[in-house]
Amino acid sequence: PELRERIAAMLRGQGMAVDASRVLTTYGGTQAIDLICRALLRPGDAVAVETPGYFLLFDRLRQAGVNIVPVPRRH
Image (tube, rainbow, N blue to C red; front, side, top):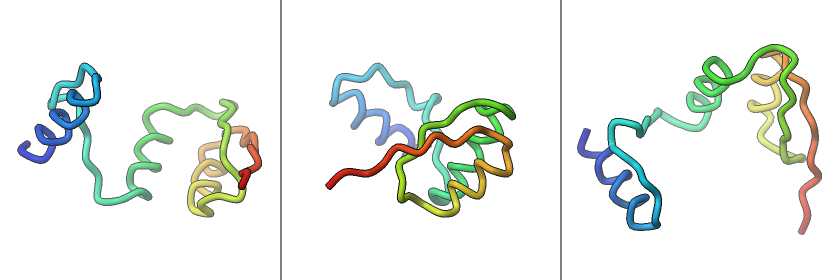
């Protein structure tokens, strides 16, 4: 709870209306990606993804059955 409150306070300092009860922390990027895929995406959804990108993200999106739309990375 203390970490979530500190994150919310930091975001509020940047002008975002954030309550600590709406902040979710994860053990890392892979867990965050998995939670997003489970909660927000449905098979057939289109997801824009920077390429080249994080290989675990592409794998998880394929497992979710979404359409990956590659967006080339620029210098």
